[in-house]
Image (cartoon, rainbow, N blue to C red; front, side, top):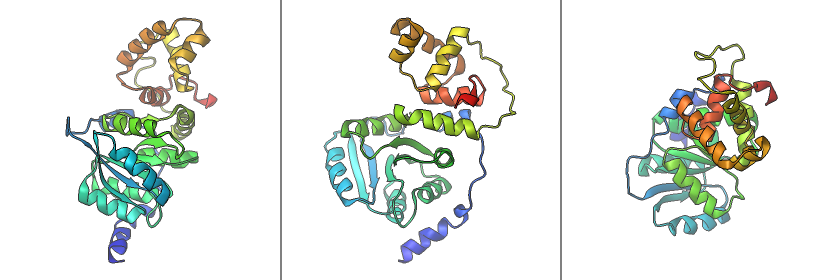
Length: 259
């Protein structure tokens, strides 16, 4: 009880709603540096309200040679306590975890400046909540029905410095961030040297299309799309499709009124 009161006290100031702000591409990219323990096991903390879920996923993750489980808890207070104590690389966090909400756990970890990357276990989230979780440091979203092999892949990708958002959620995240972006902001560079074809491909990336889908819609080969994407990544300086989508929205490289 004393521990729970102490941790709740630490997040009292964080209870106030955050003022919406636009996606910040450069700081976001800077925060996605790889974990420092190169070659070591990825330390994973699981926090989920469902006993059956924890019992299913703990042995799955423990069976991976490159994972080590630092704890498996059922509420937000214990999640924060063990994050302080064990300093995991990855926190698998049930958004609806009790005692401290998922948002309060994220706020507390951000205020403490703990270098843990959080993957949210969540279903449908409204647009303001999606934006807020990203602003608070969430680096992945995984549905509770996601197959185990993809859960493991998401942990490895997020630990290596990438964002993990499934294709089915990417469009919603892009829409949420486009709603939060200020309409009147003028970018420092108008088009970053992108060609008309590259802008077409960029628009389809924002819509969540795969390389195969883009190639089919533009009636070209996948290798051609890969060549164009390499050029787009070089010109914009981003390193993943999600970062590219956020970049495109932030600098008004696509029509945001479509989203």
